[in-house]
Amino acid sequence: MQAIATARAGQQNAPSRRALEHHVTSHPIDQEILKARRIPSVRAIVIPPCPESLRRLQDILAQSELDAGALDQLASSDVAMAAALIRQANSPLHGLAQPVQTVGMALTVLGLRPAAELLSAFITRHALQVHSPLLEHFWESSQRRA
Image (cartoon, rainbow, N blue to C red; front, side, top):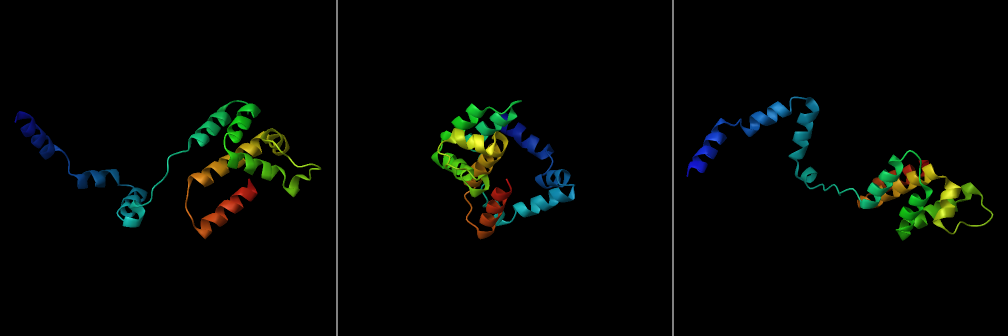
């Protein structure tokens, strides 16, 4: 009984939620964010967690020197990632006499940094399963620039 009375007293002394919102949202951008959060369609947006493969790639990129073996192992761990690297390495842009057939060869042709950027774009694109023609155009143009 004492605990309930203490909790109620604490609630009465605590600032109201409205007062806290006003205090926290004194900056105009905070007010816009708060307003947007009240819209049902915005509340329905689910941001997926960072995929484990992207975390592993970030760990590789955080090293002082890129580790070709670690990149090869990461890309080879997923058939779609490996295929994306090999496909990019076999593009006419590189003018190879013979097609690339392994992830290691693709890393050599592309270079470690561009290959890592391609993997980052690939992982991010596949983590965000949003089907929109505008988003597809965005991803395609981003990948061409990478």
